[in-house]
Image 1 (spheres, helix red, strand yellow):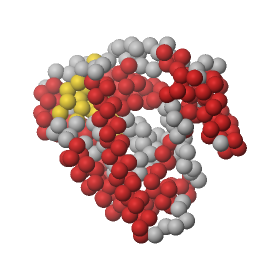
Image 2: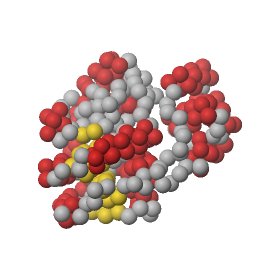
Image 3: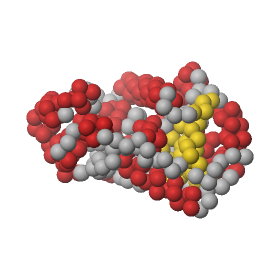
Length: 314
């Protein structure tokens, strides 16, 4: 039976069916839905993120969807702040929040807490870092990180541009390496909640089939056009977190290829499929890592997860 401080975390890899299950539960009880997805926060990125449609959102309102433009940055720390505020509002109204999504970094941050005072993203500092990268190359930026934060430098690859930017940004704003601040991180931030963690983890072959079907549908309903339109509307560049999202990155590369043709289009679609499968693989790895630290209920099928949650909720 759910307590008055219960938070249901419904996790799983992309295309595992977690959103549909969360919506079923919403229909059956006194719940609020909170999205845990680093791509759904962006406005106008609808098809490629498998975002619930406007009609679906009217019927099943989700918090933390469509909250920033694709030009902006949204951190795990900001997610924790926003999610805790909404969770508290739900509990005050006598409702149980269901957090549903596949961004495992956000779930980890919520379950374990974050560094107490990591600064928020600073556009001016990020612009300075990116200007240096443009003028001197990413190797120079990476070398600077290795100098000020050798631990982060050893963890990150040259290709981890967003992580490099964030680490340098934190150092420039605080004068301390991000790894030092993370080592001082309190682990008991969300102590006031009773988390009930449920993970949907379908068999790989089943999940790969669902991913392929979902991507086919996305192409059919206009994913390519969506990316073209938001690039033009927001004047986006490929280093933004929004354009590094799976699917969007591959479409960006295709659209900016001077030799666009049918073969290149098919290659792009294959790359997007492969990247989405790789994302699912990383999500499985994250889930197993979280299971080592936290109590979980894990299910291979939606039916089993549904039955468990109905019994838990009572």
